[in-house]
Image (tube, rainbow, N blue to C red; front, side, top):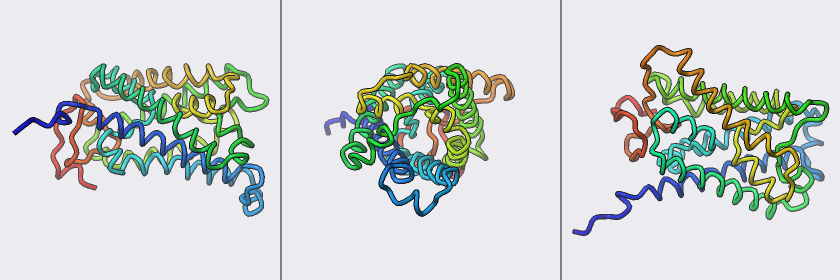
Length: 268
């Protein structure tokens, strides 16, 4: 019997990460278009822009959490964010070739999702710059940069706290949904709440505009590093990350360098 080459290849995880990121960008930014695009009915249904922003945050963040619990996320771990993968690699939970594979897949997924957004929503997407993350009016660039670093650090810190606890790890997708939704609601007027270089790169590429995009290329990865440092600082010495996945499913293989998880402790 010939060995299955996929048993030794991590390409399925990379493809899942690509598709998961593309789904997150397309469906998440579709919420932005529907809620804030010119000619869309949401502005008439919900005139209060702050409430629309909260709805957008819940829908956008919910998309990422749904990816995490989907078959795609159960296979790859649903990092769908280079900053998250960077933190896991620096913590010794990813092989370097997997880290590179994940980041490439995420960047390509961000491009594909943004291209689908522009193709489906057309002028409505263009009216919101195809979902680009941009500094808010009246905010200094150092404030925008700092906000992106701090919010990404907080997100990574919370993810690591959850995935290092057998009691909390199953609730990681719910936590990220609530936390990211609140970040979008409260902080989007400052920086656009990127937290994710792949999420910002795709719309910028499709729009052909790179104005101040260096912020979103540098600040989120730096935030991932800060988040990992904070995790090591605030948790007990020797506390181990138990899974590299945002939703650990016992019937899916794992490419991460984490201890095996008993099925009885990872069922939802």
